[in-house]
Length: 459
Image 1 (tube, one colour):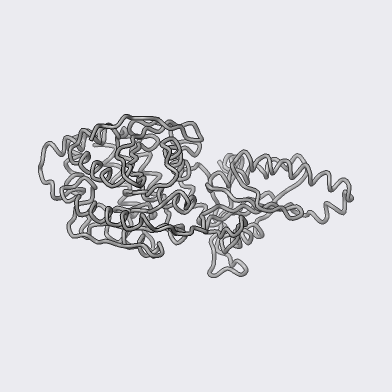
Image 2 (image 1 turned 60 degrees about the vertical axis):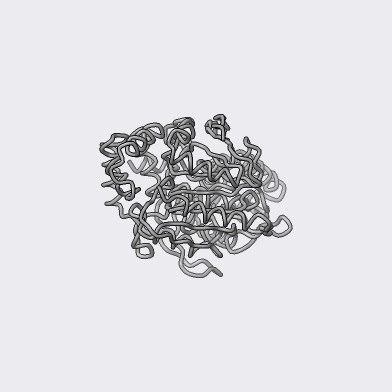
């Protein structure tokens, strides 16, 4: 098998993503690694090359370097460039450039979080979801006592700052990631080189700090893609509870718990993992599931005090003002890739394929209508929505509407799910406490989006 040529795809925000295509299998597979990866070194490290060739033996394999890593553009983590939705767009851009309409997504560590969000948002483009040693489940809490604590993250980040890419750090990490390797000097050298060719120390810290806050736990129940979860019971890098939780939360997911304690996918016992993946993919090829559910961020807006305003202005002036309001809102929906679902009176209902874009759109709408002497309230939620005859409905929509109803004048209010999925976006939130939402089970914690002006005034 020849070494494939490295190509570049361009994302919607102008980032160039390096990728390769290898193999001629009957179906596409996209490997979504953790942030430590380099497509060209894949073929220089024998164990890694063997792993890629095996995947390419039963698929058309797409490998890529995530933004800020390997041969892709290295960027400063500002202005939403490292948000979950922005990194998810790397997948879309590469699939489009590689001519892949539908692919199986294979995610490792936090790469799985990108796969899960992509599968929930674009179910028609994902044939299968594979999670190997998945992460991206937030910090330790009462529900997940096995997750990493902030203290553990801080200690690990300090080690990364001081030793990233050195032989000493590679050796200490290697003993945890691949206990079976022992003191293999060549393996340690390759591992250290792999780190350096993937990201610099500062890049590594930036990725890890954002990923420590990343929590896709709430969106897992919305995934309707056939899913396989594989992890070794004695994994010393991530407790087996990570894999068990993912398998528990995704309906119908298959969990395979393998013996051993190796974590990385190019371990000596990689064939055990690859055998299960190959059987799973081959078993799904003839199945065509009808996918009628998607993950979406819903936005509801309405004008505060519209009845009084209409009475004050009279019918003709109020109609003119409403038309100006509608033009402003629709212009911003187009700018932030929102889709208008319904307009009832003075309110809008729109959906977005990324929560950070939806929040920023809501903020801009608040600002845009002020010169019209209008104030709006806005509410957002990210959740599973049903699509029937092109119309969007379901509990996710109900929650978004209820959140919007609790917002105050010129306020953007979001559910905790939106807050969790926008880690690293630069958005600032203020806790508004727990609330009951009419017709919705349980109590919901809501957050007010704090504008840049508010942040400045607060010091």
